[in-house]
Length: 60
Image (cartoon, rainbow, N blue to C red; front, top):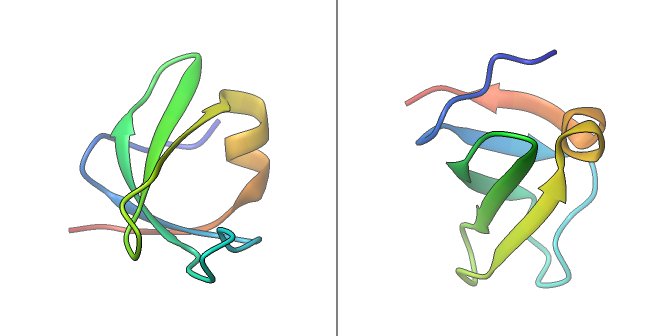
């Protein structure tokens, strides 16, 4: 289980369709709400899938 908190930035293994792979964490719980840093779209992912796809956590 990763220690990810709201406000941190994460780098994902796979990029968003816009080409960016950096996301801001907006919500943490059973689901993760991530916002793309390039286009601003928000994505909801189940916790298991999000934890598997996070490459690294960038603390602010």
